[in-house]
Length: 202
Image 1 (cartoon, one colour):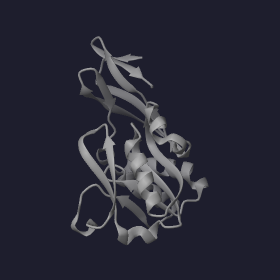
Image 2: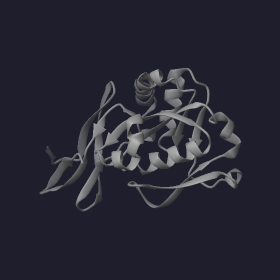
Image 3: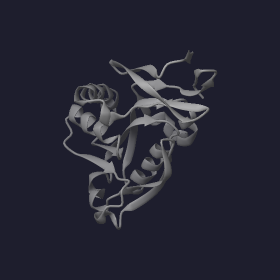
Image 4: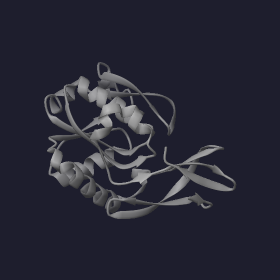
């Protein structure tokens, strides 16, 4: 399918929305989901839908990567009846001076980043069944870094949840962990096709 307009229709669980196509450069684009711009009702429904996929894994706590995964973690935790969740942070706040750190890369960020796990929060995940959730799994780099960091903190990783997966390149990045992924939908990448964009699922 080739699209000549700036929106791409996407099904996310029980909801359908149009996502804007945003060029990464002249020859490639992505359909951009910004959870912080989608409103409370959308995220509440998405959280319920994702929680239904995750519930059979019997998670004891939900973890996520800052920042766009935070609304996902809150709503999934709420739907599962969990009162706590864990955020792997990207900003080197003063209380994270001795945090566990894992470098990461993301297709939507052009600078080097790192995830940080606050040592004061290790008790929330050590020896416990943890599901890592996020908004979109694209390259898989952020999720892979999050999984490494959580395991370094002693978590028992039982699943990965996402609102969307993008293409299939993330599978290679996650390796055996790709089998942990539960997603509410999938989207392609896009390459230039004349005046429009053509879907690429690789």
